[in-house]
Image (cartoon, rainbow, N blue to C red):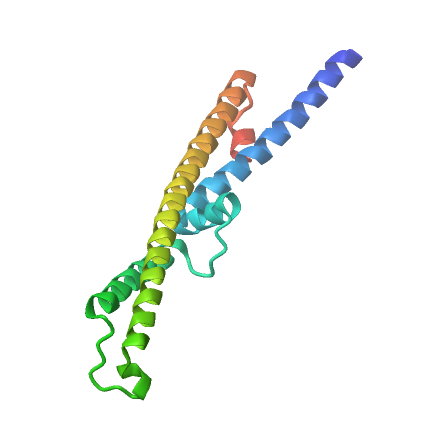
Length: 158
């Protein structure tokens, strides 16, 4: 066997080893995506969209939704106090300040909800795209192994 043939075999062996490692990594990622889709979306939100919230995205959306409802109800009732604890709660100025603040809060909650909803949709699409890419790449690796006639024991050693 010539030097060139030995180099080819060595390169091919290294390539097969690298492809096996890549296949293992892609398979592990696919398993994580399938087993923990919520977490994978959260990871995508953090890395791609800078969402740094402490809550998982779906819990944050639920909380924002409740905040929107609560604030809208406060505005609708105009902060009518039935049993005031402090005298200032009966002043019209206090009510006006509270309504103004609640209106600002409501606008902010709605904007945050909209932004997080859009980012979540993008993150879910990103995770789905990543899953497709992993499946496609694993199929390419298996096709290449077939072309090279890498025996099944070698492939199963993946």
